[in-house]
Length: 131
Image (cartoon, rainbow, N blue to C red; front, side, top):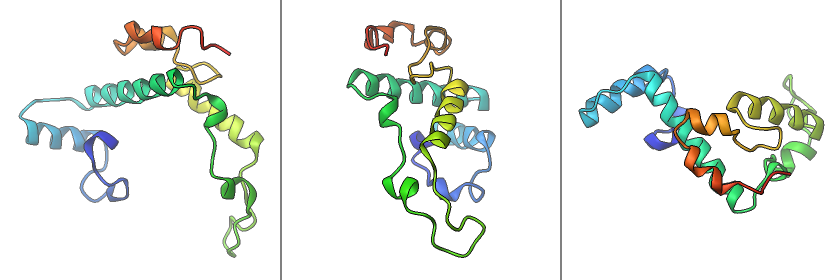
């Protein structure tokens, strides 16, 4: 989505799903693209960004939430009143997110995932970075 420079808050107004974005892309560029191709491209971009961040020294410890979200309870009277995200909850969410992405529990893209995305030659960016 970020690569389209489309407001994330506009979802549901101009587009509802990847099929809508694929159609918009095709109309603007004249290049036919399927929703599946668009999804794979988005995954490739996200994985490349992760590889660059890992190369620069970032790791799982940097995948955090703002202090306020984890330490300051929600003050309103709604159903989430008093809620905070604990480190244990964040760790579980990161584990799930990394798994869905095809990354290790340390947040490193697996060799198989890089190959699947056509990024195998970029494995060198993270070699020796395993924790």
